[in-house]
Image 1 (cartoon, helix red, strand yellow):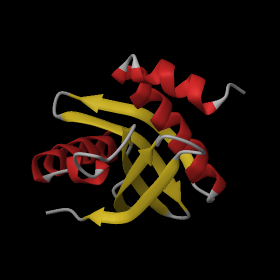
Image 2 (cartoon, helix red, strand yellow):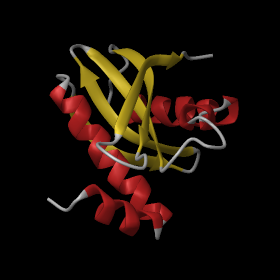
Image 3 (cartoon, helix red, strand yellow):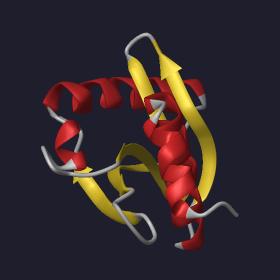
Image 4 (cartoon, helix red, strand yellow):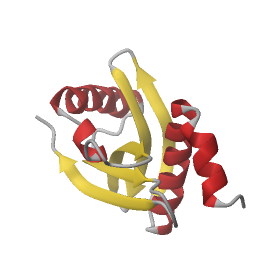
Length: 132
C-alpha cells in the first residue's frame, strides 16, 4: 500500500479521484461495521446516491463527502436541503425500480477527512436526515 502522503498528493491533483477514493474507503469502513453494499453510484436525472447499503434489515442511502481538510467548512454541511431533496427523489426511484417498498429506509452521511498526517478520519452520521 502506498504511503498516505503519496496518496494525498495524487488525490489533491484530481477532485474526481478524491471523491471516488473516499467512496471506496467509506464502503470498506461500513462493511467492517457489518453493512452490505448493494449498489454504488446509483443515478437518475434527479441525482446520484454514492452508496446503497443494508444495515441489517434497513436500506441505507449514503452520501459520502471527502475532503482534504475542513478549514473552510465541515464536509457534512455540503449535504444541504437541496441535496437532501435530490437524494430522497433518487432513493424513491431506486426503491420503486427494485420493488423494495417494504424495507425500512435511512439516509446516512459519511465525512472522510484526509488530513495532513496519519489515517483518514471517518465520521459516519446515521439517520442524518429523514424523508420530508
